[in-house]
Image 1: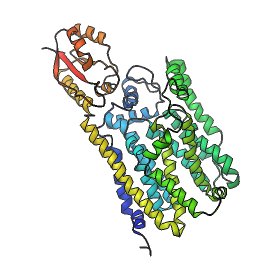
Image 2: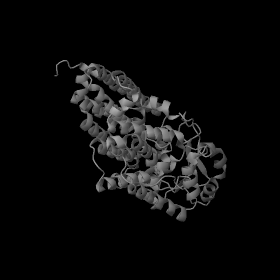
Image 3: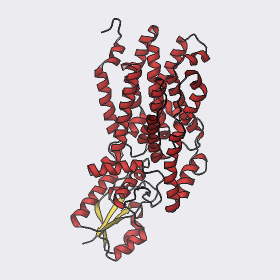
Image 4: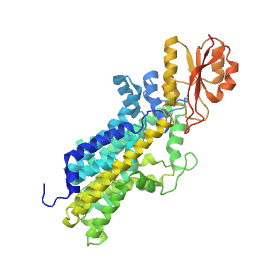
Length: 497
């Protein structure tokens, strides 16, 4: 033990603390969305892409459960399809790529912070990444946010490493940037222009010349990655009906208007970041105050004396927040790619303050308090999500579908499923391993012609359809009513004999 070492310092530099945080993070990542379901946050739309790849062979352009063209490129769907071929479990296939992306980001972030700033700042960076409300929620959500975050974090991290080591860009670095940009393009389009490019512009204008370091890798990795997404887009426009209207006009251009997608205020992301990234958002502000108070230099001189790699982290985070705030269409999870650079920035702030002996004890106390609070805060959120999900029967439709699948397998029934009105029922196709809903009138015709033995019917349509189905009866098992989506419910109709 070092002479004068505080209990907070011992706590943060103890390897057992690191192991504890790692275990807690993995548990929070894996359990927060339990029981797994596809009934909210558009999870069914993302899950359907890989399901259609495997079942229908649509590897480059997929559809939604309603038959519309899917709005996102296929890379995450490819990852889920590959996982399914290995595990033979769709639940694992849909969620494992996101979970592994979260774990990979945590490990890479921790290693980078430890090499640059030491053990205690690296632990705080790891805690900041793992123990916030966004990370624990997105880690196993069937969405593209976590894989996108990984492939936007890695190029930013590579730029940070080049600046920190004062290294020039080499051919292999540019190839790495191209691969990472291309991967992010095939996840959610040109998001690197929103989260990486603004920071590069700010750094090149304000820091690069005086520091002798560059954040710019050259033109060709950017242009070549654009070529990848352009090739996919051009093929979609040429060969896929409605692609231009749905993907290019509505999904891409519509984000910059206020008519297609719901517009939000300019400062929408700031309060959400303060709350979702707490307590780390508060700690960043506190550390900035400590640094300003400890320094007797003017603001301009203070910035001049700040390490270029730290300024890159500031511009990287700030650039993404500013540009995404300017886009009218906003949603909280879209700002997630700024979380990893903010975690590194927090480690850089802590490491710099620890050089000041007068600040050392205070910084360790604030950091330890933030870490302990984050465990309680994120743990309370995870526990609340799990309890509320079970109380609201979040696995309701999946349990019902398991009963239907068991009955179908036992009796060798031919069956179809009718979509419920009002949304929220897209996951039923995936639970029942079906590729399409059947229209009510077609279901009636096939039933009365003897082509169907069973029919899954929305509860809000049963009174209308049952009299039209000759010799039909309702099976004894059914879904239960959920508070969050009370309009969604299903019954199984079978023949009387």
